[in-house]
Length: 415
Ligand SMILES: [Zn+2]
Image: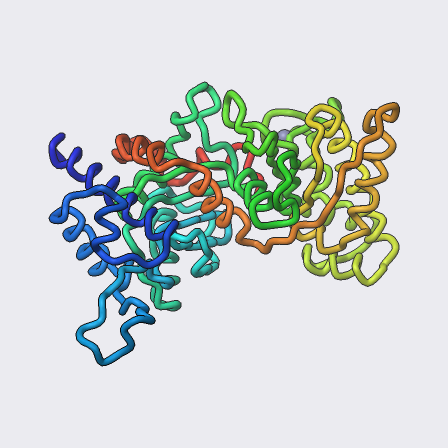
């Protein structure tokens, strides 16, 4: 692409964003009103509107005119956002499942879709699976994918190259998937760890909605986390902030895949709890059955979860002393056990968090379902300005060094 076409494309995108933004703020407007408010020339505005109409991002409708009821000449036409049009895409590429969410210009979720995915695919396959999932959603729910303004992409594990302090220096796998998606949808892609995106979704739409200081614990096959401090998602110097699962609880403990020892993940992840049940002579088929038994009040299985919650509570209490959150959100399958796991966490917080300066920290179960991180991808886009997104469009070349087997993804995998 030449520099000139590139610049023209950016200009077109900025003008489009201005028109869509005005329609979002003001509701339906005539072409004349749009022209006056957005400040574009008639030719440019008409070209943009007809392009948006063609792409079904906007619709044309008769203007309501109480002074001139029907039958008196041709009704004036207004341009309005298409309620079935979507311009923001959130994607969570979990190891075994893909979740996609699309939102419209008015920041409303228009559709969501989940599909199982074969694990351990390479970057090109993962990107193709994500594209197919978005296309399936759009087809099923008759959604018109408007010019896509941005894609929020969640991936397990480290997304940023841990050796680099530059947040744009992603792992080869992450940058490859992001570049493929960006190229396919012709849109900027923001990429982050999916536990962190789920944290953002919880403060935007979920259990911690509107709370600016929240700790998120993702408790499932792995253990992940996310921190929202002063309303901002914390990424840290190396893009690894909030890796609660890799807090060492026992320096002499079992080695962890992160390179540490005795990590929280190794103690409370669902596979660790299945092993704990087996140690107690409880035969359970899988995590689902284990949770069902605990929910049914089977004492030895309930004890395993209670003990795990105490361990998690100690780590969260230490974190709460440092971060001073208003709320801790617990997500993942064990959160369905509700007070069985939430109460021990609360007790540890009460016992260990600055006893001389007691503060109220709410402990809540997640209010969102499995697609929280995909929702978080949209939330991340909503918190990013159009200018920042346009800046991301500048580097979208597909790097050639991503491995085919997806191995760079596995470090610190948390979901
Ligand atoms: Zn670890």
